[in-house]
Amino acid sequence: MTRRAAIAGLGALVAALAALPTEAQAQAGPPRPNILVIVTDDQARGTLRAMPATRRLFHREGRTYPNAYVTTPLCCPSRASILTGRYAHNHGVLTQQPQSFDVRTTISRYLRQAGYLNAISGKYLNRWGARPGFTPVSPPYFDLWATTRPNGGGYRNTLFNVNGRLQDVREYSTRYIGRKTIRFLQTFERQDKRPWFMYTAVVAPHNPAVAEKKYERARVGSWRGDPAVFEEDRTDKPPYVRSRSAELWQGRRSRARQLRTLMSVDDMIREIFAELRRQGEDRRTLAFFLSDNGLLWAHHGIVNKTVPYLPSIRIPLLARWPARIPGRSIDERMVANIDLAPTIAQVAGLAAPSPSMDGRSLFSGRWDRDHLLVEYFEGDTGIAPTWASITARTHQYVQYYDEDGKVTFREYYELVEDPWQLVNTLGDFDPTNDPSPATLNQLATRLSNERDCAGALCP
Image (cartoon, rainbow, N blue to C red; front, side, top):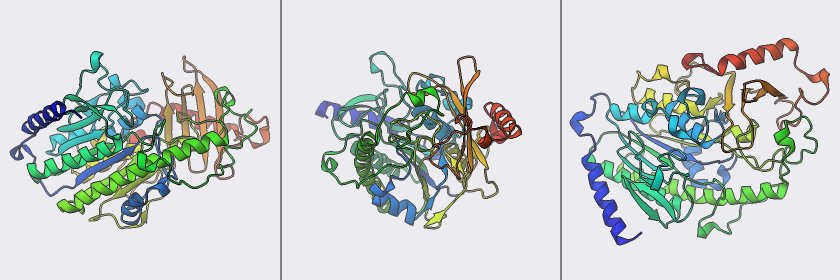
């Protein structure tokens, strides 16, 4: 970064600090935790082996959610769901175009109104603020920010909007995002003792998954694939799946590149928590780690996301709060990205926004889902047409739709017997393994109703 840009950035930081709410403006109440949310991009479930520091901090000293899902396997809709606790059909971001996003329903707005100091470092929503000439557009309800360029950013030579000024950053983006996170936390420490909300969202391990120099040749272990990678007969799958032809070597390449970028994310997380310990804020900080969706590594011939299959919709999700969450604890419930905002609202004492959210607080043990609605809307990215799914522990039912909303194809998988989703019982020309007509009718009716659900009526 040039000296002129650095001076300009310092001036912008001073101006941003002047705009921060004062202590007198914060709402009085009992001590509330800091909130840290760390989001990765396209991180497949089962990849934490490349992140030993993260495993120690979150597995050993926190809680794991092994049955975690996203409600839409695409960056913008999923991130909007994280920030609002709402399904995509309610928050309005259906594709990678975020212009319809109602930012007034974000947890960042509610927290800021309640006296929290808010900061974001990294990726907000793809194409947010994509105005002619890359005019910087501030992420709403954040006091400090360093956000990636409108197309989502990259790994090197990336354009950032830093407190309203555009800066061309040559530093490896994960390292820069982590450094800005720490800088913002230090700024809050100097400002006052109010709680803060820090949203850190890296580009990694999104393709092209460019590793930091020191990890370019790091060992990632061998991977032999799984039955879904070697699926030879896909005649039971929809046409867009039958047209794919990715092979094991392509899945291996994608996996290796992703794991190497995650090693830098692990370094970043270790450094952030070292700063929290230095500040004495470690025990009063509730932290979440999750991905916005998964990614297929040649499963069913696909190296992509936006599909209803489990590698696309299942994610790593972990929580850490030394003052409240026992170490090495496991929550087996079906949980989702829409559950983060209600959880944050509960621990921050924000009762008012909860009815407008579709998710449920992870810290309430009074519920246990038997299924989730997962939805995807065809747009300018992805490979699949519009679809919606009833996804349960034991089975998955999927409907695909044309532009008029007519069902064009259906899938049904018995996940206990067929965890790799090799046999679509509705497309294998074997009527003896089909669900009963009554079961199919019930699933179709439920899916039709839940595609319009809101609040407590959502699964």
